[in-house]
Image (cartoon, rainbow, N blue to C red):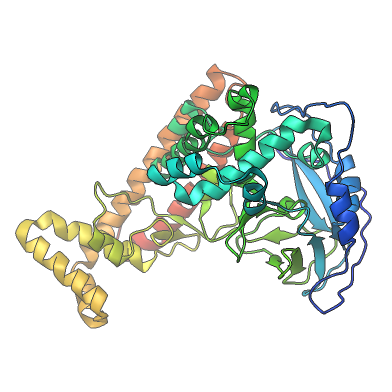
Length: 454
């Protein structure tokens, strides 16, 4: 049961103007001076334990002093599974096309700026390139920036911002091994990959930063916190940077009800603008991308229960190139909340069935693949009609088998919750995720099974 707190934190909602139609006026020189100024003489570290209280009051004073402009923008909170979740809402009715937030470039935490500040860490970059994780080099630099500011404590110009951030997370890195056993195969795999990525970006690379203190190098909790902040709040920019714009990172995801988009101007400033009319008190939401519920849970730690679809959970022993040509991927093999099934599911399922028929089936697989890549829709349709009942029967068998597996996962989760009260606080979220998937699978069965008398 969600305990709605509605923090509606006092914010000075100042409507800002634009001098050229694109770029709002801001206290650029004041921003630079504030960011360059330390905020205390005695260092006090930030408590990053999971039950630490988030200081949101000082966040607004900090954002104002940094030149962050807010118009009809406020923060609201609600308690979810015993922990505070904070989001942004419209302070008043806000029509489409209205600027609601402006973050100056000087305030934005970016991988590019961190690399310029710390210098080129060639050994780290070579390591990540060699183990196939070169795309996460920007993430590492941003993690390093977070770590440095954490170590500075109250002397960091980002102290008030960092002290407002969540410490409790529910994604793959935060889950236990038992949590993984309560998840369907794909999302469990993604959660394990998230944990592996955390280890890849923290364990060995930390030893290759010569100026980093031994205390920080060996502090797994600090590295974990830095990873969580970068991975759950970071975003790519059109220029190729990876960054965190403070305050803009308080906007949650909306798969179908997003109403805000972010843009970065030529100066590197971030501007949030509404894309739809937003009534007063309604949440301001971004679209984090078309990733699907499984990836959102594993990476960000939330359930995208507004998603209109989910992966069909069909996982062959081996995914061939021909299957990929037919559309095998987690974001295309979809079951919909309407009970519909994506064309890719039927194509791949038919391909798998044909492969069970020996040499003859292998030839038919080639025909199906050839018809698909050449765009011969008539030939492809003819093959589907020929094997329609067999394909549909296998589809329903798959749905029933997966629904049965969800029953077993629920039994395991409930057993763990009873035997270790409070030890697995992320189980309620996992169960909600599994129930969301169950509802879609039941919709698919109800719509598709009668078509073949099942």
